[in-house]
Image (tube, rainbow, N blue to C red):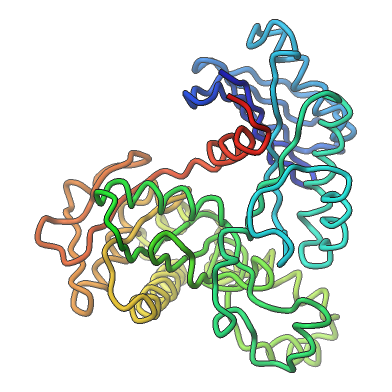
Length: 397
C-alpha cells in the first residue's frame, strides 16, 4: 500500500487529495483558496467531516505546509514519512511530453520554457511542485499533463492552416486540454461497454471550462480546445471558437489592446457574456426556466455548439458507440443533458431515458434501451489518474 498526494496548484489556489493506493481510498481532500490575498480559505475534508479556516496564507509554500500540518493534526497520517509520492497536475506539456513523467529539475526547466503556451497555468503548477519538493525533500514527484492524452492526434487535425513556420518555430498547433479527465472517463466507458476490441466514444467534459474529445480505440483523435483552453465550445466565461478577426475589429472600435480583448474573451464572455447573469450554468438554467430571453439564448448557443461538435466527431470517428457526460455541468445538469441528446435524436438515433437521466454525480447508463448510441454519466476522477501514474512511475506498490 502507498499513500499518494495528488496536487492541482493554481495561481491562487491549491487543490489536493491524499489517496491510499491501489485501493483508491481517499484519506482526505481539500482546497486552499485566495492564496496571497487577505482572508485566505483553508478547507480539508476527512471521512465526510469538513473543517474550514479563514487565515492569511501569503504564498504556496505556506499553503503546502498548512496541508501537511493538517494531515498530522487530524491524524490522517502519524508521520509525513508515510507519504510515498506526490503527483502534480500540469497543464501544458507541449509536444515534449506525450505521457506522465517523473518531475525533476530537467522537466521543471522544460515546463518553464513551455510557459508561453500556458502562462496562467504552468508557472502556478511549478510553484506547487517546488513548494512540495521543499517540504517533502525525500519523496518522488510526477508530472501528469493535461495535454498528453491528445498527443495521439494526427497532423491533419492538430496543424492550423496558417504559415507552417509558426508551428515549427513557435509550436502553434492544437494541443487540447482536460486530457486526464477524457482519459479516465473514456477508459471507464470502455469497461462499461464490455471492453470491446474497437470502440468509438465522444467524451463531453462540461464544467465552467468545457471540452469534447473524439476517442477511437482508446486514443484521442480530436478535441475541441486548441493552442489554449480558450478554443472550442462555449464555456462559463470563455467564448470558445470565434472569428479571429473579431479581435482586431474590437481593437479598432474600442481602443483596447489585443491583450485586453483576449482577457475579455477568457473572463467576460461565454455564458456570462451572453446572459449578463452569471457564468454558472445553474443560474443560467434558473433564468431559462423563468423565461429570461438572454438566458434562453445562452442555453441555445451552448447546446448548439456542443451538438455541432458531436456531429463532426461522429463523422470523424465513422460512427459512435457511446457519449459520455462528465464534470460539473455534465454530471449534474439533468436538463442540459436532455436538451443535448434531444438534438441528436433524429440524426444519430440518440434516445435518453428520462428516468435514468434523473440523477446527479453517479456513474450510470442514461440512454434508453432502443437508443442507437449508449449515453453514460461518468463522474471524472483526475486525482485517481494522477495517483495511478505516480505509483507506476515511482515503482511503488
